Image 1 (cartoon, rainbow, N blue to C red):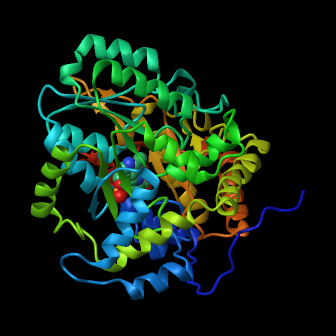
Image 2 (cartoon, rainbow, N blue to C red):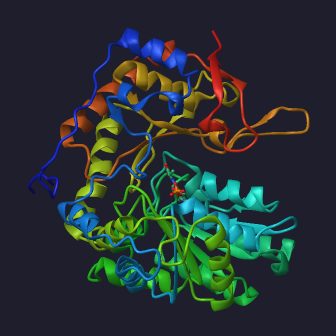
Length: 457
Ligand code: F0G
């Protein structure tokens, strides 16, 4: 078999900045050991997120020039609406400036004190929007999803038995929505099977609870279904995506992921009354319903991106890139999530740094070490992001301590990835020298974005 190559050539390039180890030590100190506070021109390979960081295609850039900036009724909106509708088959399409703006709208309407939202795993902004409304978020990922080092084909699945039990305990009337996140970002970029989506749908139907999809990475999820689930090998990505959405009552999406856009998002719904309520809120917080929080040019870029992301050559290369890095790390003995996710490679910081307890944030310590070693920026997905305190101010740690290396779409080449592997392996060989961290300052919600930390030694 021949090498799976990047299915594009490069027309425009951006330089990346080299720094010395001594400079990086100082940069990190000044950023209070929080990589969100590091200036990106001090980062060599930026794997902080795959969100909004995609390289757009020449067609998308051409679309940008064609964007119509009319306040109302722009043709760009109708192209966007058509693109979203042809995948989701939902009649009501509401543009927002990014995913969390769609979340803010839906949870402001459906949330509130005494309400519960159940998911396989809620992303941090989704959980924050739920909690900000006064409601509670509950994650019910399947058992396989809780063991990073044990491979399984669909580790993003929801535990359907637990879903039913939880609905019985809480009472369906207190649960406005069940949300299936595809792929399961906080759980390792792992896919959800069609079978699981259908089973969740059946339970929701039995209790008359609407089911929504958090669709940020729908195309990557559809590709995994095609590869791994019986009966889908001969279906197109579009057909698989359409089937996934056919079981849902609505969806939220950040177009900054699987639409190759630098900004944008949407809400798509079947329920007209709910759509009207959402649009009323949209006008106050985002903008008129034919642009939401976006410019006409963004709507064009998304419409084209949604089409391009379903190209199988692209998805093949995309998923292979994660596998390639995962294989290199596995061969060197590095504890890395198995199998590879769709948009990122996740290091298991608990096994990587067994000498650092959760209370000393092993994931964050590892992310800092990768920056110092090679200027690689990653993100902790563990107790810094999801930790809570009990009544005695003691940390309730997150289930998993992960470090995510999210790969921006169509941005880095294979040699960049080879370099990243070398950096991680070097850090792994010197792991005993890494020490833990403590939090010095933090915000009440989404603390990982702004927290200040210090080393423990
Ligand atoms: N849902 C999921 C599953 C996400 O991964 C994100 C964003 C959002 C919702 C919110 O979308 O950023 O457009 O407001 N994830 C980014 C990340 C930030 O790095 O994983 P947004």
